[in-house]
Image 1: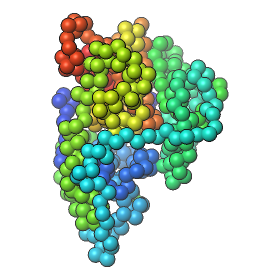
Image 2: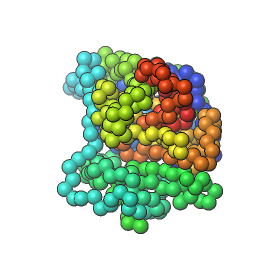
Image 3: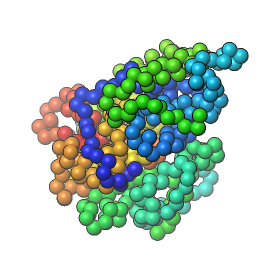
Image 4: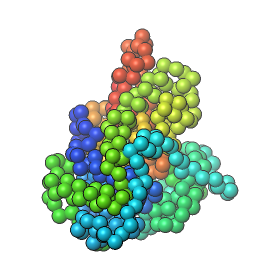
Length: 211
Length: 203
């Protein structure tokens, strides 16, 4: 939704608590503890599948909850009957939780990495001018609409990272070179924008072409 | 069930109907009954995000960067490693980049695509950061959004917006406020605000 007008003022809340309701605590914890954890891109895609009008009307944790239910179903962790009744199928085998209380602090403070070995060298170097391709995939992508077709400059090369467009859809990690690309305000928003302002996005190589 | 459509009244982040609380409780009970989650682990996860991570972690990073030039250099060169030196690691902080405000440049962070945020140093994001108004307007009306936070910047100061579209997470190092020369690191850390490290505020 980057670059849309008309979605209202930002409303900061003084002394905001981490969670506003106990059910938000439980949703946050369930998403982290449940067997659907492990593919962050699939989770993001699931939340994007919420129809737009519903998405805008829902709070953040309502979206997390809706997506968690769908992910549990899709992953076969629960059946539709179990979700509807709230009771486990007595014939189903009982699983062992992925996380115990003792494991939590270590698991949450462990840093994974999205960086992968990639035998092919990156196509672009810092300083090079690139155009964000004008692509309109139906599925998950991290190519923000507001830069599609626009020209920027490569600012930093991050090595090859897990590629969400593949990873979200069961296509494996398919690591691709990742770059920070900087776009100047007037190239994105026209002559009314402040000349000095700029916008940096992290974009994978398949999103880019030489300009 | 192709889509989950909760049939409750949506009221944009105010007091939600208790119906969702019941639905969440029902799902938790089901997952516990199936042996998929351990309720004690859920309590531990909540405790971790309510007490172990939060903006005070980031404030320590910033205060150290203000106070120790070698640390500042390490932070700017490899923020992930420099932040890990202070023990702040974990999910949503795997690939950190620190961006430094100067008299000529003001940095501001957003995630227009979802709500990516550097959990190990700032904790979980506030509701406004995750909201459609911030996600949409931080890029097309950055200065308008900054003004709503009371941050009015002259045109000579370049605004640099960092949109966290991958797994790289950004931490803004605010300018050290004037008159803080004599303060120690802990006293300086107390001056660093969450919004200062997101970049919607100056200190």
